[in-house]
Length: 258
Image (cartoon, rainbow, N blue to C red; front, side):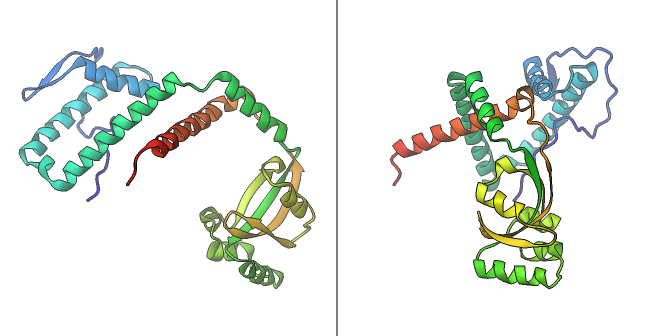
């Protein structure tokens, strides 16, 4: 049984917008929808970039009314008593409680600006001066890589083979085209190998899946490294994820698992 989350602001019921829809308590068939509940949903919407407008306030109210009516009918039908639904509700409760706890952990142990800056400086120092347009096909064994290399030497299409043979899902979709990759993001031996390839020549290198058949489609000067302000949010999110994962690993390590 699959459960799909309803879109919060896409309401199928057309109700005219109010000119000034300040929140107030609403009662629907005896069920109260508080102004505080409406404000909570509005806060989540504005946190994701939406502007507070009378139209948005009205849309929130309309959606909560519609959801309440549907929920009332579902309760009459005994939907919550179904085992699969009860299990889904329990799992959702556990996830929400866990997420809030981890959010509290991050508030008490925040990623500092100094930590973000340190990662940025490290990445900037590793930023290469050139970019290489790479095509690749990922396979498990060296024998497979050699066979593919032989097929390419005979003139078979790189894109066709990548879509059929590559273990990389992205390569299957785009015919093995990795686009322009900064040399700072690649192991030095791979950079040397790629820089030595000309025309349609290929080489075999080790990769995450086992082996990769690679081709250099071109080289160009790298663009300037992105500014600190541009990548700061992304770096912070990555560090927060690392901190949370490390904390969870520590909890699991201390737990008595039988």
